[in-house]
Length: 571
Image (cartoon, rainbow, N blue to C red; front, side):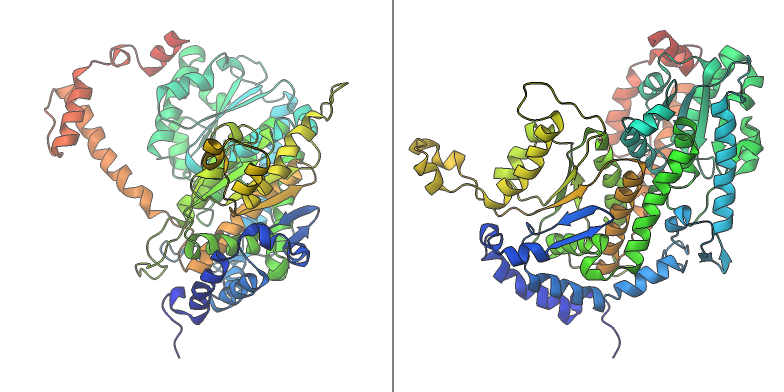
């Protein structure tokens, strides 16, 4: 018999649907009373400890999810990804971000060619360039060493590298390597972002990295031209070759822009933007800031999880378990969102990166074969570091909608502080909440408990916590470059597992195209209205009215000597 077209047509999917009723009748406070169940619902790899006992699941649930993985051919799909088969079928591409951090002697093929030597060739080039740059041998147009870097890119060219940079800033080893240097990112085409990215920087000591595979990305290239004008207006046109480099494969346009093609660093079609932080997209600016050895530790951390994901049994495979539980929460229990709650300020940019990684990957409405899906896929991802989130949106998580939570903690703080006379250290105070919040969500607080505490009757409904709200806890030993790489890889593979089970293509992003296409029409209208006085035409009434209102106000910066002049006046 032919395999069912959709995973929801399988007996394994239907068995999980039938199982939901039994789970919904059982409260987490009862499930948590089973010590053997709690012990079984853990997994550990290289000191990273996962506890998922606070999920609304039993051993039977996990068995059924593993059977679903089997019928979805999860193992086969993982192997196809690692072997370089073109699993991104809508774009006819391999999906090989794992090759970006593979050991030098690994063999990973795409179109029958081992791509690992080419990856290492680029990494070797980055190491050589970053060593020269950091040593002071690379100087700018006026002979001064460059100590500031602005990386210009958007989407995956921005969110992933920013997450890693933010996580490394307070790591003692990385911070020592970055002394006297600044790394900033420019993503938004809003000129305010330009102003912020160059505030207090001197063009004489600044290097700009332009990240665009095709060198045609509209927002990135406008920002790149803006920073080029900033450099040229101060140092002259000959300074571009010394103060701007590129991550791109379009060497023709790189050269036409004024950047020396020898200072362009390649990446490949088999690297999706949101999976590109381990390519030159992230490795180059991060190496300029921290040195290649630190970045290599990050890559090795990611590679270690790649190996775990590929070779470990599913029963103890952290990304697989996380992915299966997300499928359970979304498609069976009907929870549309996920909160990412790192109890580490260094991970403050994790949630924004995972937003793109997850929602761009799995926000799909059709199967990989183009069949409309009768079940929900993808999650609405959001989050903040604890304890900031507790004073922001935890009210809703505790007493409003049910939102499964990822609690991420670190055993050893990057910056430990203990004040004499305090009951606990600052980190222990933080981690007290990491341990307490999952239990508060799971157990809640009953009216009976409130009565025993003599809470006034009129406040009982307001202070009752129903509990039975699922979460999981991921505890890292430390947060060095290695663990940052491991955490990244865990989420990358978790998201891939979800897509593999749902039968969707997690590696394309056609949903971002329509808005960009319509924006090009608006861009043309704005140009014609401003330059030629043409009326607004060809849009619906609402858009036409908004455009007319927008165009009615003359923009001061439009009449100045260019965008850079306006920005410099702001500063």
